[in-house]
Length: 208
Image (cartoon, rainbow, N blue to C red):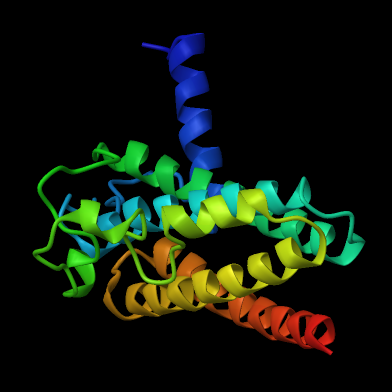
């Protein structure tokens, strides 16, 4: 029986999602086996869930500083970070959909997939659920700042955010088993380390 138009569109969507995730799309023919789907408690799934949350805060901070300064260098950096991390977040949430796994899991401490899950109340963390994340208090400070004060605070917060992101991505490079997930995480390590160096230079100029 020939596939319907709806079925054909669904197949195409899955293929495109895999392609944009950075993996080679292989048409299953001749009895070729598909790669195993990660389990919900795997490093791949944990990384995808938690880095999506981590990235969302970076996007939020970047939009905040965009409206708090007129400095073109900071606004350009914020745009690049927001655009890159929003796209990567979409990829990671797309993987969870393709794997048929939930985007959130209750009762599991953050960073458990890296062997770092704590037993404390997440509410005590003031919103900083994972390494490098800004607290709700710090985000409010950024919202209230303007001009050079906002630029410096953003650069400090985003530098720490990137350092935490690099730590998480390096953990995935070591623990994740799906090639497309490891490839993206290694790309995060490389790009965010480069941006840390750039932000360090930008901070030094504003302190001079």
